[in-house]
Amino acid sequence: MRRRLMVAASSSSYITSCFTSFRARGSPFINAYHHRAFLSRRSTMNPCGDAIYSGPVYPPPPKRESDAVFSVARGMESDTGSGGVLEFLESLKNYEKLGVPKGAGIESADGFDLARMHRLLSALGDPHFRYPAIHVAGTKGKGSTAAFISNILRAQGYFVGSYTSPHILSIHERIIAGKTEVPITQVAFQNLFEDNRKIIEAQIKSEQGALTYFEVLTALAYKYFAQVNVDIAIIEAGLGGARDATNVIPSANLAVAIITNIGKEHLAALGGSLETIALAKSGIIKQGRPVILGGPLDPNIEGLIRQVADSKQSKVICAFGEGIHCKVEDIKLDADNGGAVQCCNLHINPTIYEESLNWNLDNKCLQLQMVGSHQLNNATTAICAILCLRDQGWIVEDDAIWSGLKNTHAIGRFQVMSKAASMKTGCNPSTIVLDGAHTGTSAKVLVSTLKMVFSSEPLALVVAMASDKDHVEFCAQLLAGAAPRVVVVTEVMVAGCRLRSTPACVLADCLNQAAKLQNKKVIHEHANDEIKDSELDSYIIVAESDSIVSGIKKASELLHHVGQKGAICVTGSLHAVSEVLSYLMTN
Image (cartoon, rainbow, N blue to C red; front, side):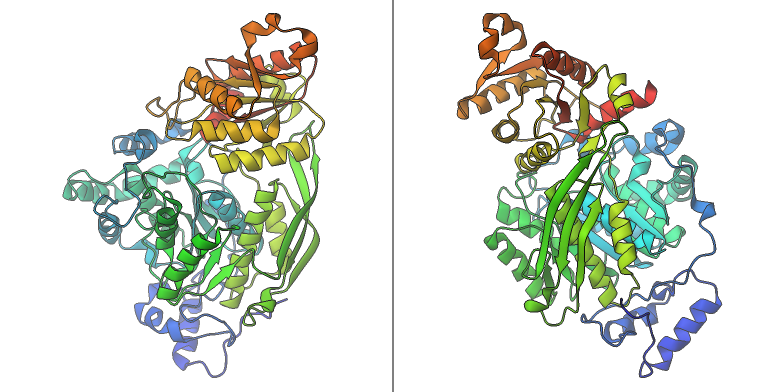
């Protein structure tokens, strides 16, 4: 276990006096961000005497007496009680509804204007200067990685802010601050907005209406974290990195940057190739600050990211480098109560290739509620980020790491519904799984996990997608690995409207194309009678439905028609997951 933070005798009296001063004032964080002079000198000081990175060191805060003022009953709140702020946000341009313009996420004339985000935050008092942050970018896995990191730090007793997107049931999910994973309340969110409304409105006018939904929401999150005095904030990038509204964290405040992986999503917005996507996401790398790479990454893509890091003197640590091994050993399903747990073998000792990393962790039975090999990859990436914090002087004990990982769960990430919830959808006795996979890569890992958990059961898929996805590739990956008996395609609203929805008939055509490429037989539900029962097993039955919930019922009926119960997986979009959960909450 790492020794507790000590102020070296050789450290300047200035540091000691600052520590004493801030403690005397009862600060919940020995907060150098309240003192610019101290901040400017932190880059050359190391209170532990053994941190391996130059740059700011963030001493852990003393324990808080109580978090009661920030606590609410666990569970998601409806958005209906935050009318003022929601109506205001909805009046702004929302690219989650409209789709992201071509080139918007890259360093070019077409890219989002990050300067207006800096101007907005400056008007709000630069709240993001008042706490350290971990910035997480990547094509997939960034939300799960952020959740793992947040819960590890909460398990150690830190007061953690986390900002993620998109939300599933309520916008409040995006902003969390505290020692427990509870979203901002309706009252706190509304008050936050009202307290800063005049400034925001003035900035919108000054920017000639150019400020967007995501930019204002991000600024409010940064302001809230400063207001409640978080010890650290975990920030998930929205799109890319370089021109994302979250990418305003200065190097002095950036504890760690993380790039989980690089894949073909938002191609047009991020330059059209894996190389331009990698460069866009590398935009979160800051001068002299450590970078964690998830992956595994293509060697050429990893090389590009390393070039950017080298140009900024930023140390790169690969979460899948030599000396780091992880493997899923077993997955246990709780079909009655919902959920699943996987047991994993994890070993981290990268000193083989990097002597300066004094890391050594072993757990032959690491338990995760987030299942699938990809989630173990995300957990490993999160651990590497935590070990970076340790090297910077943060106290994070091994028990907090294991506890935080075990207790992390996320809506719509291979979420196994309870038998009671499944019955409410009219699906009985099949098991329902909700997963927001929406790319070819995520479809592939979803299929792999489905095969591990439901190895001997027939499978039905209910698919709905946004219009800006690669539908044929997604369907091809589902069919290649899952061998479903039934696929029901349907339509779902995206971000509350149908501007980016894909009609069921379009998805059905894409499914047919994918099946033809793989020489698989597809038959429409109404043509069942044309096929002999003895031959039906060699066909994939395809049906269309007008909603997700009716699609689940239809999938259950078709499985029953072929004499099997099996499992039903709702996938293609987190918005599809949202529709199912909203139905269950209102019924």
